[in-house]
Length: 194
Image (cartoon, rainbow, N blue to C red; front, side):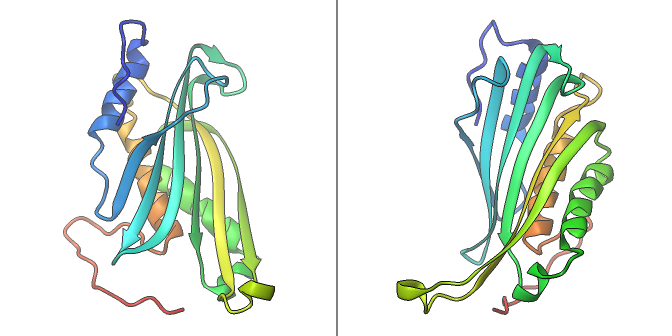
């Protein structure tokens, strides 16, 4: 995970990088640092994550942390989190007109449940359906939901990044149909119905 902290790295961003490095992801999530956008903010870091259950990938996502010590009027702060998460869903779900609203509520409820101080929430939810033709005629039909969102977190010594990371991991689980369990509760193994 992120290790490129130098003496020129602003202390708030260095602290966020340290929290990202120390994040303990839930079982089944693997996260790795990837290239981050260089033109949007003076400081940035990005991760890609995948949620896997029984060797089957259930959801993927990317999370980008941007930092501009001078602040950014469009963000309303000095930090911005940008993400997308995507997962396959049942074919019946993709036609449900409430799916976008439900998926957006997964995002906002994840932030609320972890006590994240966040503002300027923005995003889109896309539900898509695909059917193969020609050489792909025998491939099964696919339905996916994708949530793209961004928000301005309040990050300072008393408002850490970790709750935002925990909320994002919960969102990844929700989109995959694997919501977080209360502490002390274990999930039972179940087969996935296609």
